[in-house]
Length: 420
Ligand SMILES: [Ca+2]
Ligand SMILES: [Ca+2]
Ligand SMILES: [Ca+2]
Ligand SMILES: [Ca+2]
Image (cartoon, rainbow, N blue to C red; front, side, top):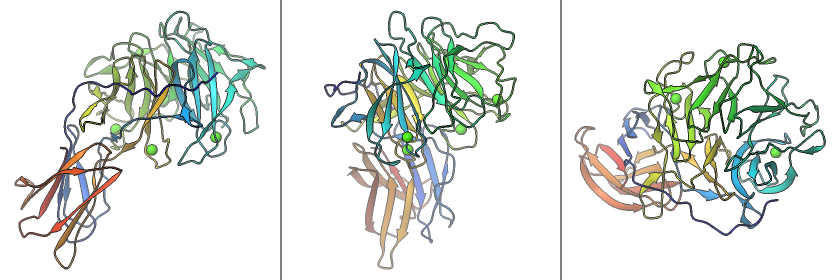
């Protein structure tokens, strides 16, 4: 049963690269932002066009705990969360595997699509009883994934098992808005052999190789990530033998307890891998093609802390992640279950100049997407390459958007926003 928890402050480590945004003063109000890849350098050119459309990795704002009523939501131990609209009412709900009960709790969203409020709705059941997937010793809570597994447009449940690394399918054959799950069956390979990743299976079902047929992507206890290609169909999945994903030309290993999700994190049209492990949360950029993904080496996701630094995400030593647009702004947010049973969410945003104008009386207004805790500097110059004059520092951001206004000076043709 969920219980109220003491408020605990997530712990994080080390420092990350500062981020930069360059912008040229536009004759028109709109700017185009042209982003490069890490270290998060972004350049804006002074042409009238749609703003902020180019590839750029998402940034994260500081974490907040998911709440249950007025207290921090706490399912027990080793929370493994996933987000889905379980009762099909247009509002995302929360599904969480937890220990020591080895069950899966459901929290329905009684708020709105943009401001979720959670209410405990019991444990998920199959065949009339609470689903229980024994975790053995340690931190192996059931690892749920919710989605349409058999192409009949309703929601099924996959659960990763810790002791044997298998994946259990609970099929939903109900036509009601709320799923009614049949008893579980373990997934197998095409030839009937057992499907397993060894230990600590964390499944998701998503198309990896661009053939529009969802595949099984599954994290493993040894920190690797398996790809089981679906050689059947969307309605009748059939899995080939598992292959461990590569990154930077070698087997991807994130340390231990990998949890993978697929998402185009930098908006370049190619699905990337985002995965948590017991050491952090990582982005492996796909620099291959849609049908032949090639992953770059893992880059830690970062978020600001109260001191104004940007540090790698690390909320506990048994982190298990999901990606979901928790606040309804169309950008995927990071949902992170913790050792002690709590769950944090990190709101994502694109660090970018969103407005650049010059008024008739010579006032320049620069506005950018920002994050709490961070301090910003404004740098100007007559060209992109000579944009080096620091004209303002220590600009605080209490929220999600920050503006700087100053009298226009002739040589201030280009603007750059950076942290610090
Ligand atoms: Ca719902
Ligand atoms: Ca596929
Ligand atoms: Ca991408
Ligand atoms: Ca969002």
